[in-house]
Length: 295
Ligand SMILES: CCCCCCC/C=C/C(=O)SCCNC(=O)CCNC(=O)[C@H](O)C(C)(C)COP(=O)(O)OP(=O)(O)OC[C@H]1O[C@@H](n2cnc3c(N)ncnc32)[C@H](O)[C@@H]1OP(=O)(O)O
Ligand SMILES: NC(=O)C1=CN([C@@H]2O[C@H](COP(=O)(O)OP(=O)(O)OC[C@H]3O[C@@H](n4cnc5c(N)ncnc54)[C@H](OP(=O)(O)O)[C@@H]3O)[C@@H](O)[C@H]2O)C=CC1
Image 1 (spheres, rainbow, N blue to C red):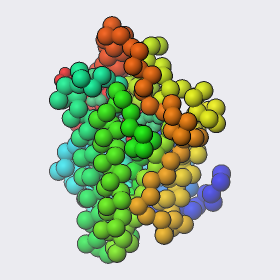
Image 2: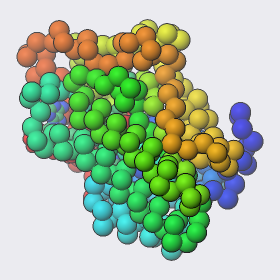
Image 3: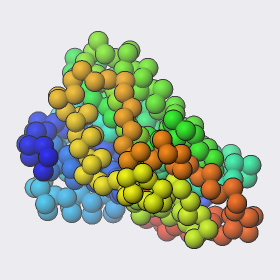
Image 4: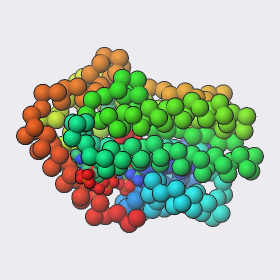
């Protein structure tokens, strides 16, 4: 362990999308360093299992709520429940997201909306609901959002995601200034590829769709990022050790975006037939996950 195992003692941190992938890894990392952690997602069973798995390792520190972050009223009520039943949050990680690869000319309005609203509205609603309470009660707070290096480079075939993540970057810089006088810090991380089950089903659904953005050999360091490496960065930003850092987005990608292959430009060579296969494969994964949703 790089940091002291109790360095987050007294912290209460909400992680959206904390039942799977990176969010679950962050939940485990923060709980292992002494924080109480609250995880959100739309699938009760997935959240319950994730919390139980981590709690077996660290004790009863992880709690869950099924919340759709695109629904403002649900977000406000769920943040209120944490405040009432556990106490004020000290930190928030805007991590939940939706994404899939698709030729932009073929994206339906609902496809655009599913991605953009989850990333942008969800992060805004959750940040505002926590921030308003911090300000009203004179409490400090730290917000960390999980972005992606496309905020620096853009990326074809994932345009709604690149746009919405750039919007959350703008929120981070804007509120860092607006809320600094209340002791509220906003920062973000921009990871390169950290393969997770669902993201790879959405972004690399077929053999033909395996291009730079999802390939380890395209990373100058020659490997994918490890969860503990991302966890250490997010931990620092959430901790009192970063009290003078605000408005920053820190890239963590082994040099990937500087070497340029970090986008889906390689998909330019895919045929309509290959796109149809990619869409069918990603949609099959979505349908399986949707059947498990509780909200
Ligand atoms: C350099 C770094 C490399 C890696 C960077 C990675 C960066 C970012 C990664 C991520 O954010 S990965 C996150 C992946 N996780 C998720 O997406 C989790 C949540 N996902 C979902 O809920 C679904 O998968 C969803 C499809 C994205 C959304 O589900 P929802 O129930 O809201 O919508 P649907 O009704 O199913 O669909 C809405 C709309 O979208 C169309 N659509 C769905 N899938 C596809 C697809 N694969 N291709 C094209 N279009 C698709 C669907 O048909 C609907 O449109 P209409 O048909 O109704 O017009
Ligand atoms: N994996 C990678 O290489 C990279 C990932 N990222 C970012 O990291 C974050 C995590 O991605 P990753 O772990 O890979 O992917 P996952 O698909 O595992 O995580 C996404 C999470 O968001 C939740 N979620 C989606 N929509 C909603 C909603 N409307 N309300 C509440 N929760 C929701 C999902 O749960 P449920 O479906 O149950 O609601 C899921 O737990 C994302 O922001 C992604 O953009 C950034 C760069 C690289």
